[in-house]
Structure formats: C-alpha cells, structure tokens
Image (cartoon, rainbow, N blue to C red; front, side, top):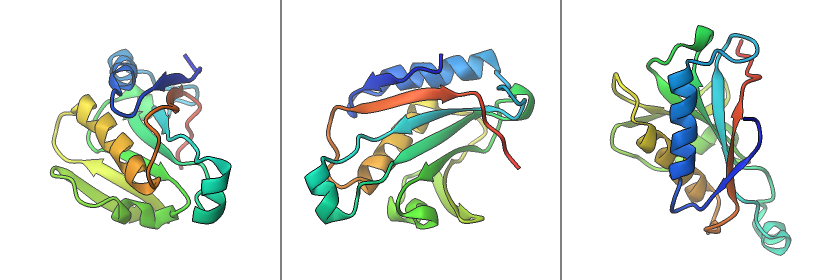
Length: 151
C-alpha cells in the first residue's frame, strides 16, 4: 500500500478512497503514532521552475489517524512547500476551515466533529494548486505513509 496512486487534479476520487480505507482500518502505523496520506503536486517543467523559483516539492500530508489508530478531530493537513510556515495563509479562506502556522509548520484544519473525506482531499488538492502556480491537470499522485513519527 506504499506505492503511489496517480490521479488527475479534477478527479481525486481515488485519493478519497485511499483516505477512507486508512480511516476505516484504524491503522496506527509502524510506530503507533498514526498514518498520513501524502498528496503530491506535479513538479513544474524545468524551464518554468527556473524562472518562477518553484522547483521544490509540494506536498499536502493529510493526517488520517493519530496515536493508536484513532480517527478524531482535528482533521488537518500539513503543507510542505517552498513557502514554509506561510503556506497556510497563502491559500486563502475556505468555509469550514482554519489556517495555522504552528511551530514553523503550515497547517489547514477542517472544522467539525466528523471528517468529510471528500472535502479533506479536495482542500489538500486545491491548496497545492494555489501554491503551485498554474499546475498541470495530470501528474498528481498520492500514497500512504505508515512511518509517521510525531514529537
């Protein structure tokens, strides 16, 4: 389950299924600290990256389970981009979401007591699309990260 799942930006249904499968399994991960689904935006073509300073990896790490495999609030997404902690405030406001730059890390937090997996994945993909100027439709990918360690 650690292999990449490819998808188109406009159709992240396969990623929603991946998130739902991890949540339903209540997987605690290899270290018992939870499991994340990593969504990765396609890299820019080298000539665009050269002039736009946008050649770094852009990831959204969806926290699906926590310690012991628990699925609970808050349902958040860590943004790992060239913008660092400022990334969460660059994506703009979404209804039902909060943005945070806690301890130098960028987070988007879905409000509410129950997770909406479709909205969680859509929020991750749209955030990366906003941070990645004019992203391609194809070339997006996601995978399960079971080796999560949180301090």
